[in-house]
Each structure stands twice: as structure tokens, then as C-alpha cells.
Amino acid sequence: MKNPPAPEYAHLHETRIEGTQVFCGKLLDVRLDRVQLPDGQESAREYVVHQGAVVVIPILDSGELIFERQFRYPLGTTVLEFPAGKIDPGEHIENTAKRELLEETGHSASNWRYLGVTHPCVGYSSERIEIFLARGLQRESDQQLDHGEFLDLLTLSLDQALLAVRNGEITDAKTIAALLWTEKILCNGW
Amino acid sequence: MKNPPAPEYAHLHETRIEGTQVFCGKLLDVRLDRVQLPDGQESAREYVVHQGAVVVIPILDSGELIFERQFRYPLGTTVLEFPAGKIDPGEHIENTAKRELLEETGHSASNWRYLGVTHPCVGYSSERIEIFLARGLQRESDQQLDHGEFLDLLTLSLDQALLAVRNGEITDAKTIAALLWTEKILCNGW
Image (cartoon, rainbow over all chains, first blue to last red; front, side, top):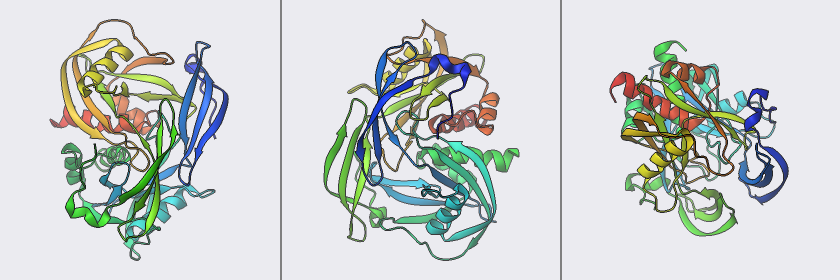
């Protein structure tokens, strides 16, 4: 899974000595590793091993973007986000993107573009989020949500979404990162 | 700590029934709660309780931005980021920002602006990252890094940083979110 660290940054590397799994839930796999630091001393690293996720930027033919409002229990409040979800074991990431868009918004897309990766939580999680742009959207069905999943859908123009970042209504990091990509693609030809 | 959920989204609320701490390390406080879903059914929520953090956008008088390259053990690679760090218990967030900028880059700043919050990991962490812009930078000292902290400093123009997002060299979500703010402030008068 992990690429070998680039040799030009070897002076920053930490090397695993040993490790244990300290919690294994339905969602979280938490590890505690003993590591050797660049100066030869030892330290501990606690982190979550994550299977990865996708986030989808759904752009309607009108130019509006589809967002979700979802209650996020760790924050105790609802959060405005682009559609997103975890990669099932063995699932191709593009299929995850198509599945999550359909399940959460009821839309399919004829035009998919893979943009890249964002790492939400580099200090204590291995999670990588694959960013996809979806255009040519077509309404296929109602939402087909997982058990325990409840969310509202809404659409915002890019300008409305950027204003929502500015006034603190959009705070989700993956969504703001995806909005940077969105603006660059729509306005700067990325 | 948590604000009461806004009443207009009560149909999305999840309510805590009971919970336990399943891991308590030096860094991670992991909880497992039993919750009541909006439809009255029960489910489990696993998440990290986090003390919060800051990220600083340091803009030199030349217009260049200060970045760090740091090995991030959960990813097994180095990551390009803005200076950031955890809020100490009882510490005012502006003091965290000043402390982290000084410790990690050796700079003080005469002009601070608080921009807002980003949530890096809404699915399984309570972490909130307070975003600060720092201008009027002055080199005070060498880095004063914590034990076990090793990082390289570098400067990039805004255009170089955006190009680094585009080509996948900057993937850290808080840094990309902060770059959206940076561009809007420098180019659109936010």
C-alpha cells in the first residue's frame, strides 16, 4: 500500500519498529506503533488505518452543484458536503464514485473525470480521498441510502458555495478542497 | 462543547444513548457511542475526540508563502503543508497560532487575521482546525521543534502552490482549504 519514501527526504523518515492494533471496530482500525525517528530516538505513533474514500463534485447541466446536508455525530451538528463515501474492499474507485453518487443523490453521470487525491487527516489517519468530477448528470431514482444514513440534498451555484465557505456554512475540508478544484476547472481551464 | 443542533435540521439528528472510551493514548481518545437515529432505530458511532488545532497561512512581504515538508507516519510519506499544530489545553487559539508559527518556522507576525474553521474529518473525528492568516512576518530564531518533530521549510508563490495542488504535490486537505482562502483574500478581496 505505502510507496517507499522518496530518497531526497530520507532525513525526515520515521521507520516502524513494531506495532499493535489497539481498537478494531466496525469503522475504525486504530494502531499504536513504536517508530525510530530520523535522529535515531524512538517515539510512538497512534493512527487510524482507513480503507480510503471518494468525494464527487456533481455539476448539473445548469452549472449548479449538488450538495448534501448530513448530521455528523462527532461534531454534533449537520455539515454541508459534496457526496462522498468509503471504498468497499476490492472496489475500483470509479465504481465507488458512481455508486455513492447514485445512492446519495439518485443521479448517474455520463462524463467522469478523475482529479486526484486529498488526505484529510495526515496526523492520525491513513485515509486518502479520491476526487472525481461528474458531469452529464441524469436523475435515475430516489436516494438509496445505507442503513443509518439520513441526508438532505440541495444545489448551490459555485458563487453561492464559495460564499458559504466565506461565511462559515461550508467547513468540511474535503468539500473546500474540491471547491478549489471546481473553481479552477470551471474558471481557469484546469 | 457541542452547540445544540439547529432545529430546522432536527429530522437529521442522532442522539447519544450511551458511550464508552475504547482507547486512550497520548494522542488519540477513541469513543464508541450507541445512538438513536432519526427514524428511532439504533446504531453505533466510532470516533476520535480531538482537542482542536490551528493552521497558519504565513505570507512573507515578498508575497511568498511558507510551507513545511513533514513525514506523516500514517501515510508513510512526506507531506507539503502549511504550519499547523494542536491547541494545548486552555490555550487561546491565537496563541496556538503564534506559538506554532514560531516553533515550526522561527517567524513572528505583526498582522494576524482569523479566517474561520475547517473540519478535516467529519466522519470520525471531532477535530476543528482554526485558520489564521499571518502577515508582517519577521524571522526571530531557528525552528524550536518539539521532541520527535522534524520538518523542512520552503517557500512557494501562490501560483506555484496552486500548481502543486494541480499536479498532486499538495494533497493535504487543510492546506488546500487554506489555499482557497489565500487566493480569495489576495485576488478577490475576501
